[in-house]
Image (cartoon, rainbow, N blue to C red):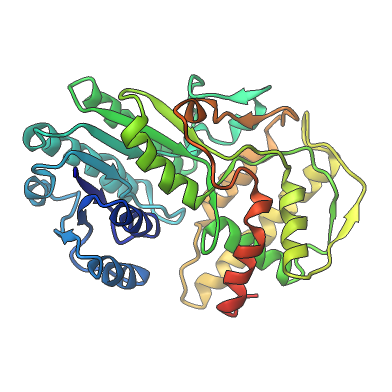
Length: 360
């Protein structure tokens, strides 16, 4: 059986991937920082119980990488800073230059390497992707928002991978959509908004799709593409999107037994409606005040106010296409079958997960 390396193995995605690979019988080498913090402590304990080989390393320290990458057949590179609060310099140090160090080590030491599965993101297209008429495919040109360090660093990180692919690295790039499922940021935010009554009413249809994918589909598709994917190709990892954003929010309300009053449908196609032009500046002021209040209490918010302002400013300048969706055709052509083709198939099990933990 092949030996695989998982970077960022103590993260939420990395640890879940290690568990799946163990179930499939792979020989696993896992790596992450030597001193885990927060939830990564529990994740590290969990994966060590699986009997995997764990070698600590730091992507920003090239000297720690040679023994990590030696004699591996497949690399699953999940390690990145995913934090809208972190400055661009830190993002670049880890996401961009850390990936460069890993790729350099693999070219020197990874003589048996067959596939390098790189975790990118659909966010490298920025909010401009919502302007596309029809499907966002792997052939479209990314355009990250200059004011959002995470998007910019992930775009630059992907360019590093392609640079090393041209030098012989057998790269396959995954671009997952925003993740949903128990404990993901997307569902944590939406469940909070619904169960706290922050969304008392909503148009029954918005005519607006946000690309989403269940976290299990990202993990399972990565293993599938390591076996069936084509080196040198990009794959968008996204569900079938047969719903709009209003369907998502109303399904959460139903699953958690909360009431949201249905307003007449509206369309976000074309420029934002007059309501949107009023709402976005108001949302920006409220959100920035909330972030500053969190800071005054000595806590660190998830997103820096400047980054949030950049997101909302770009949102306000976007022409939304009612026909937009992200394509998963290339992924399906490899034979992958989605576990969750529709967000609404997951909502009850996610609601139960939050209920068991007292979050809703």
